[in-house]
Image (cartoon, rainbow, N blue to C red; front, side):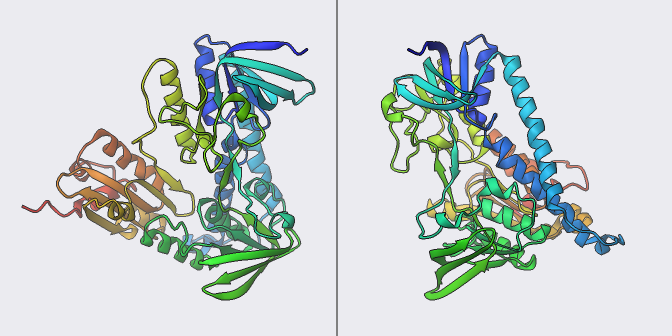
Length: 465
């Protein structure tokens, strides 16, 4: 009979929420273990956020080579070596892996590498990566198993062995013609990066616009960006079935605006959503229920339906951003200490790392209209920001929504260089409840991108009456 190891806390999954909860509580003297099957520190470090931004930056460097004459630089023959792009990414991932292991060790948290599944209430069996089995039970358990790329039931899609973001980040040869299934965040970032690195790229999106939940001017701006960079875009396109094998030749048989079309390519990348890693881990044996989309069912405190069992991050149905997973850690940490912290009403800033970036916090125009919230709109082209002119990066715009009856900022969107950094300034203002006039009247260093906020908020119409 296997020995049962008892802990104050057992965490299943070492993603953003799990690793911070483990290190924090272990450093406070808690006896705890973290079970991880593959990616120490979670997918963000290994196969998602950070590696993809690494490759995106390599692609940006390539774009500067192509624009060298614009900057007065004469270059000789050059070419992209995808193996070098991949190796730069791998080095960063390896370095982060070392850092994560060191931090686990320093905190006193025990890292258990293997595949875990519940075999009873608060009890997890682990098939160890180096062989053997262990059983761990915690007075408290936290689930942090994340999500993975979704491959839907379209006939022939799975059989075509498509790339997901995981395999795309390991490419050592450029695809001749990459077809990207999905025009959301992941699809757009990879489409632009691979196009800049030298592939022909086609995006196939089932909705009527790219990033279709954003405002029309955002979708339109991203569509024009794709067109200008030579990316073919098919929106309002439904794929009926797929033929072929990714890496050799694929054919997507689809319908667009009522007409049948065939989209051909050499490689297929699926970027059409995420599915939670909640199947096959024995949740039913632990009394943990899932919702109708298979995410772990939680309340506003991130408590599951089982006593003393919590869930955090993507698997709990939280917005799928690493910064939200980090906030989930803070929610659980505080509630375990007897606090009352909830996930409702929190800010969810977003950033799409195309070049230029898209960033938004608070309400969009479409959300405000849908909720019947009245607002004053200020909008300026990025060309009005002098720093953008020094960079020769004047594509895009900034806009802000301000309450009609007060000077409170309701939302902010930027599509342009360093949009994510500019957004953070406005987010702090929203969090602090300061009026838009505080940004309008601030003394901001010149020439910076944030200086554009003075121009933007100077365009807000004064309150009537």
